[in-house]
Length: 98
Image (cartoon, rainbow, N blue to C red; front, side, top):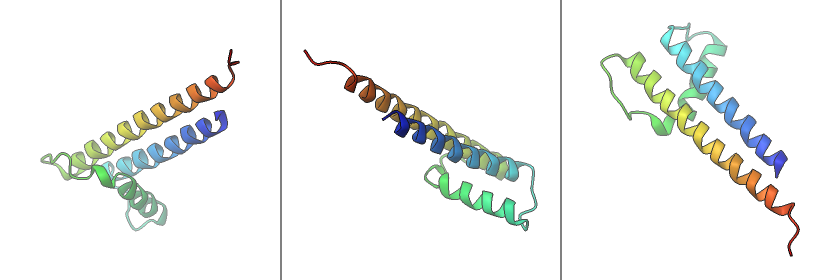
């Protein structure tokens, strides 16, 4: 279970990192014709898709940044809860039953 908790933590960090990098590329007007920028932006849009349109601000860039930030926050919280659950199940298995 500890290994699974580590995998969940790493996967969540990668997902959050991709979303954050996509938000930075959008905010800084990175060249969308660049293959790396285009790929990261596509993955970020896909991963943050469920959070698209939560808020609408005057600026399209800041709207995306806010919605992506909410996605990062939610993914981080859910991953943290899953890791804690896996750690508690793992700790419970190590105890001797009387």
